[in-house]
Image 1 (cartoon, rainbow, N blue to C red):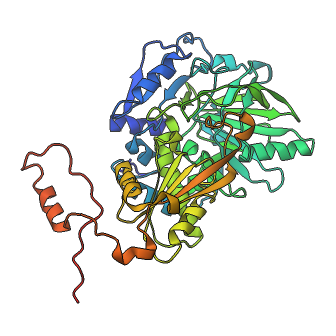
Image 2 (cartoon, rainbow, N blue to C red):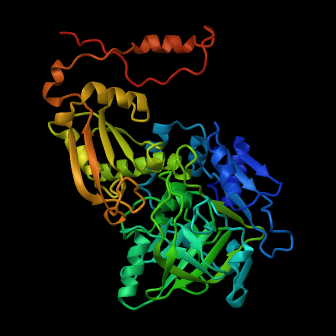
Image 3 (cartoon, helix red, strand yellow):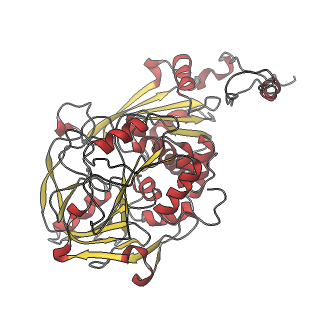
Length: 504
């Protein structure tokens, strides 16, 4: 938070800050981990504000349990305040300002700092070999038709590229198969899947580590698309303004978050898979049907005293965990990608959270500076690393349209676009098996994208009708008198104002 002297160091400090915001609910009475916790998180997700919920007494796990884990659900949810403090910004930062700040900080990459095992909180306790027992953890079932219990769905999974050695920190679902085994579901093209496939081609096993209780910033960054030769640890450090403390894993050369609450270590043997799924996903539907997924043999469980496990519910908006933070960090990443390509005139970008958890619709507000500018922006935004995966609808609007306001975007679509001229389709693009819109699962890794130009017609800009907007001085006068006039609610935000015609 704004009054903290240093960046958030771990999940526990993050929870303290959320509590200070008044957005933490502690449930001390027993709650069942199978569906009941998920139901509570789903219903709380629809409240305004939507709180984080900490289940302190999972039913069936008493004081004699050697691990004694608690479960945290609805981590950031749709709360802009929680997203802001997770990104190390003041809680009252407004949406576009937050996106702009995050975009700026993405240019700063700080490598992680390795510390000794003696100084790493994660090594307070360890279960190894025959003592490994995932049944000691209250791993939950989220939805009625889930194929099993899923651990650490607000996690970070660490793998190493067998060719260039870089560490990937990704967010992937992990289903418990037994006391010592979990499945690792990976969409085609994702970094950890590429690492596994390359290792298997060489006949090698794959070391894997996963933090199931970690500062939610790891989840925010790990869910995004970055260059495949730069570790997410560096981006997390850049957003924090401080190197992430890491420690060497016990059984591999992986580096794990030293301040995590719980980390599992394991190995994937060559070609080792097991049937996994389905799982209720961010689209608001169950994902791919049961299919083979890499099988992780868990060799160690490291944990702090009374660890807290993070659980990210995937659901329809606004109860979908990823939707709110995707709206911020995915927008910032796409904007950063366009900046790196030297594309001028971008005024704002917003990946709307209600559309498939922030994946479905991206709106770009821009100042048209030359012929073909809008088409260029649409085409590039569709394929840059931050925006290439899954996104179906990409809309360009003028700079006088607030991209975060769906009302203004629909107004621009209705008044500035001509469907026969302003819609282009990209086919056979990078998609996901989780997309339910295509009936045949074999088709789902491939998708399509609609590029919609909802900007004023550049060929006829000088003849385009003038928009009816307020004078800025009148808006400010009314805003100043809002409470005196006893008008309800807050003063709406307005970004476009009347401009007097220049003198001849």
